[in-house]
Each structure stands twice: as C-alpha cells, then as structure tokens.
Length: 363
Image 1 (tube, one colour):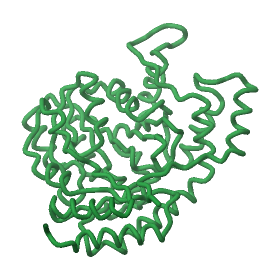
Image 2 (cartoon, helix red, strand yellow):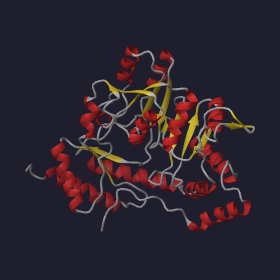
Image 3 (cartoon, one colour):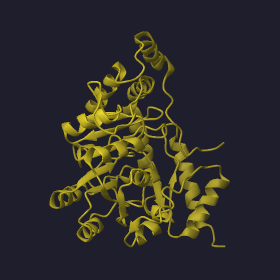
Image 4 (spheres, helix red, strand yellow):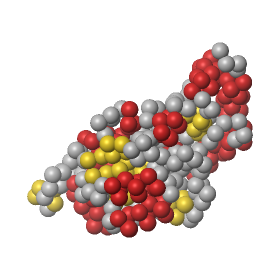
C-alpha cells in the first residue's frame, strides 16, 4: 500500500449537496453571489482578518496584488513555489532574487536591506512564509517603513497561522492564500487576498471583475472571481477545519518527536503556531538525501523535493545576488507525507524509513 504525499480533504456530500441545491434554486452561479459573501464573512471571522477578497486561484491573487499596489520593481525569494516568481515576470515587473536565512529558509531581511540600498527603484518585497513558517515580519515591517516599499506575503502555506495572538495575514500591505485542493483548507481551486487597507480591497474587487464600476470600465482589469460552486466546497470544508488543523498539527508534532535529533528541520518562528501544512527535512548531503529517497520509494512512501531547484536556476535572466544558501538547501530538502488522511502509524512508519535511509552505507 502506498503512503501518499498528499490527500485532499473530500467535502462531505450531505452538506455540499445542500449548498449546491441552494445555488441551483437561486440561479446565482458567480459574480459575488450569496455563498461568496457567506464564505468571505466566515473566513474573516475564523482567521481574524478584515478586507478578505476571494480569488479564483493563488497565482492570480499575487498578480492582482501587484496591480493593486502598483509594484513595478520587486525583490523576492528563490526558495518558493514557481508562482511566486512567475507571477512577477508574467506582469513584466522588474524582479531580483535575494538569498534566504539558513535557519528558517525564509527570505533574509538583511539581504533585502542590502539590495534596496543598491537599487532604490525597488518598491516591493515579495516574501513567502515557507511551509507555513512565518517570516521575520517585524523586521520586514521596519524595512518597509524605512524605505517606503510595499510588503506582500505569499501565505499560500499559512492558513490559520498566528504570530502571538495575531493572524500572520495581518502583516504587510497584503497577504495571499491558496485554496488549491492540496492545501490545508481548499475550494478545489481558489485563493484569497487579505489587504491592510480598505481602499486597496475596494480597488482589487473592481479589478477582478474586469475593472467595471457602475457599468463603466475604469482600468485594465481581469476576471479572477471565485464562483458559487467553489464557495460551496469551501463552506463545507470550513465546517471541519478545526478538526483538520488539529490532526495535521498533531502529526507535525509526532514527526518532530521522531526526527528532531536525526535530521535538520527549519527553525520555526518562536511566537507562531503550526498548521501541519508540510513537514520538510533537510539531509546532511545530496548523497544522504538520495539514500533516504531510495528507501522511501522502496517502501511505497511518496515524498517531494520541495522546493527544488532554487528558482534562480529556472529563471536565469532574473537579477540575483549570491544565493548560496537557497541553492544548498534546495539540494538537500524534501517533504514527507502530511495530510488529514494520514495516521499516526503512517508517520511512525515514514520516520523509520527515513532513519533506515540515513543509516545505509555510502555506496
């Protein structure tokens, strides 16, 4: 039997059907319908945020943010999912990479500060909360204030994450979420933006509906709305989100207990909780990673080298400083299975396979 890397939460049909019947009876299938408003309201309450705008996917959420905030020149991380960078390049935004922090794997504020000094045209920082682990949000806030730049967080992995008693989504000028089926919370495909300012929310809401306001086109817009059927899935999953997050965080803690002194783990933000979005491990060398990967494959355990490669090797034309840490970590990191359908016994089995792979003799 295969232990899957990921296994999306399946919406309960009894609840989902009631929502779908409501949609069919109303005839309101998209364009900010009743379920769109209900999901928005419930997510804002659950996450502790305001100005949440539902979007048809996380990548478009990034692009809408850049347009809304007027970002024309940005610094970002090479250690993230490809969309973090490709969304910038797709819109012709001048982009450059800075290296990551060796302990957290998040974008390094120190490296960003140096890059801004060299290039005063930069007006945006795009940082990822990698694996749901919050960036140094306080330091990025100081950077933004001192240099008059916008901060956007790719929080695709950070659903339900708090720094202290405050949602991590409340930091920066905007944060984006992904509601892809593989995420902790999902609408099959979808996402959201949380804006700091109400006026940015209002502007973005027009932009995702072709920039139409009172029947007139006011800007270059796009169609990025979340439809009612997707909202129905989100509402159904949201009913069980506490149970989902508790189970995933429990599995995360069990992995940590099994492997904490065996492999390198990212240093988690000291004031943040965990949501069990991913469980990454960093091996001592590429050779050791290969041995662990071989052992996992032999036992039908799925894994993913997430994130590999460092994105500077994918987008070689993007300006970059020295990126030794991103390149090093990307060659030694992999994510182990972690999802709602995983059992504690599965975690113990996966952990044992990792240990066996590490103890295998070097060929």
